[in-house]
Amino acid sequence: MSLPFLGRAVVITGASSGIGEACARAFAAAGASLWIAARRGKRLEALADALAESPGGKPEVRVLDVRKPAAVEAFAQAAGPPEVLVNNAGLSRGLSPLHEGDLLDWEEMIDTNLKGLLLVNRAFLPGMVAAGKGHLIHMGSIAGREVYPGGNVYCATKHAVDALTRSLRLDLNGTGVRVSTVDPGLVESEFGEVRYRGDRKRAAKAYEGMTPLHPDDVADAVLWAATRPSHVNAAEILLLPTDQASPTLVHRQEKET
Ligand code: NDP
Ligand code: 8X3
Image (cartoon, rainbow, N blue to C red; front, side):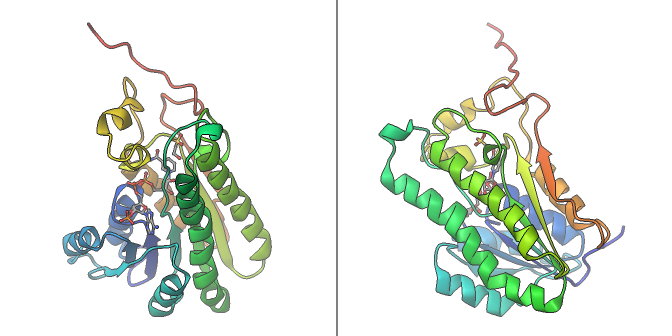
């Protein structure tokens, strides 16, 4: 088996579940020396234990809230410039129309998905630029390309991620650092449970009668982007379930009665 990342550092934020965890498993199998970060340390420790015998060694765990500038900076200092930075941590809260929205939900989404992503980039990119190489991979979303009812602030944060991906490609042109975005449609993870604050039944409704993406499908796309030859930048990947044509058009099988 080829190990394209043997001994090379890969940093993944939001690695305690879903897409980030799947990315950690995929990069570990590709030989990476991982740095995995999120707020839930126990989850990260369990993942690190599970990956301890990986060819790149046991992942380094960092309990991190991406909203905290000093902690993000300390993380970047400790990890050093990575070969790949998967800037993935993110969440949605609620699905209310804007005029009924909750200010704290807005704040949490903006501070995590937008400001958190910025803080992580600001902390890690100087080292990557100085090294003259590296690959920044944003976790965007179909919600960064289209909007849907109640998606308002979440969609705005993901549209902002899209704008930052494109801006960074301009700012980093000539530095040797690649910038990509992977934009999934519906992925079955803890995303819905977080959006609906633990209401699993409501979260499961999003996938009713259709086959969503699995976090491993997204990790495959991330790993594919990261393993292109250095002169190739897989700039944007839109990854949809076959059953999904847009945020609002999803083919669902009728339930048998
Ligand atoms: P999960 O809820 O399963 O994972 C979210 C991850 O983000 C967790 O590891 C969580 O860790 C971490 N996270 C959230 N807030 C913070 C924070 N303040 N600091 C550090 N880490 C944080 O959802 P997904 O895996 O689905 O989501 C991952 C990314 O994919 C998000 O950016 C999301 O917007 C995006 N996405 C998801 C889609 C989907 O349908 N599921 C589709 C398109 C994009 P912890 O709570 O331990 O901090
Ligand atoms: C997550 C996909 O459509 O639930 O970004 O917002 S969606």
